[in-house]
Image 1 (cartoon, rainbow, N blue to C red):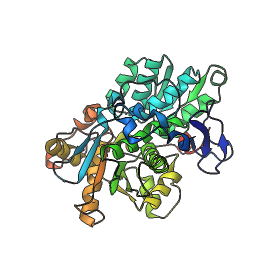
Image 2 (cartoon, rainbow, N blue to C red):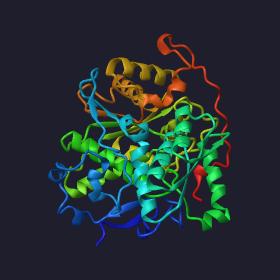
Image 3 (cartoon, rainbow, N blue to C red):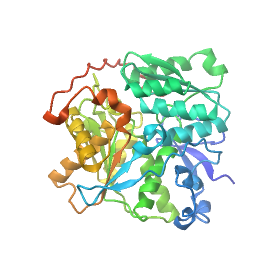
Image 4 (tube, helix red, strand yellow):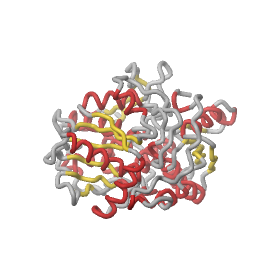
Length: 412
């Protein structure tokens, strides 16, 4: 019997077979989660069984789909104790292949694409997911077709070209890029030539790759969960994945019923989750005129918003925003104090922690994990346009306005 038993809709609970490519639930557009025979897995999978395994995310293959991995060594990134805050740990995802946490999700998604014999993969991306897809598709000998905003960091565009991906630059945001993919899906070539959409949460396996962050945090803390996890949230796949991992680990007997306060941090220039949280909503609204230098946070409406907001509520967490000026100052601060050259998105986690510490939400004794989602080296052209030493204003061309018919807000 396969470890992966079926896919389950997170809205209606409908089950779907896991032996073929799947997108979202055809009934209600719900995100599909991979489900496993955890009772059977528990018989042979334990913390002790992990000890001799290679330090990559595929050490957790017992709770990943059974397929030959397309791997570049992703995962098991260091959990670094902060030099400034004794009970804070920084999970440095910038040390993944392609320089960001996106390597995890795309390694899993491309693994399954190759397993199913898919030939062409398409993705709308704010930047780092594009580079990750391009790299893993190259390693799997699959065509990658990238749609990303014209103003993405230069590194994202260059790496996609070098990996041999087909790149289309779009005058707009990631939502406009998603619309381009949606238009492509209506073409005859899509239906006949083995195309597949690996957009955020539009297929089940990027969540599976990202959930390994939850297993790693638990393992690296001696199978104890922290009091809080602060996660920079664009599409929010990592937040979904870690919460799923905690549930699996409890069923496996690795941990108990404890859960961290899950904190979602966004940019004040694009904060649909924060707005929805503050207003007590169960889903977000499209954020108008999204603009932030943290390109990975420039997601006007995450498709998994209903799950993100539910996780924040169940975990006793919350959502809050950081300004670009705060993010820039935190990027420089982490570099000087911690020796970590973080992506702007990751530095937003430091801003959130400082605010929550000052407000009393967290105490200095609470163990809190901050996620740095990428390397600052991917943002040199962005960070070089300003000097935050004297709080100089951000000098960046305004982002193009998002159009209302964004593909990211509906299944196609």
